[in-house]
Length: 83
Image 1: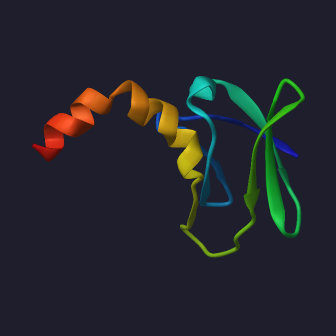
Image 2: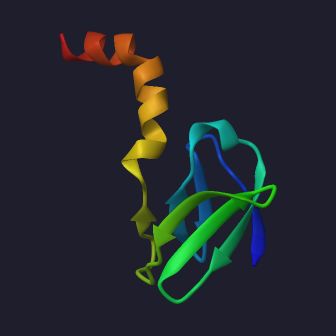
């Protein structure tokens, strides 16, 4: 078990692998537990993300649902980009 700070892209790194968390945890220090097949990320003893563990160097394990609130909040920007 280690602690890690969530970066502005909603990412926690563990052994070079990037794992996503929900946007409200940006800038917070979280606990990361690595098991053989999964990674559990917690904030103040509450599980905030569970990912399949990967051992491929420089890989991403991103949950699209973690980014949905940000996309919905900025949907005007997204729509403007498409026009």
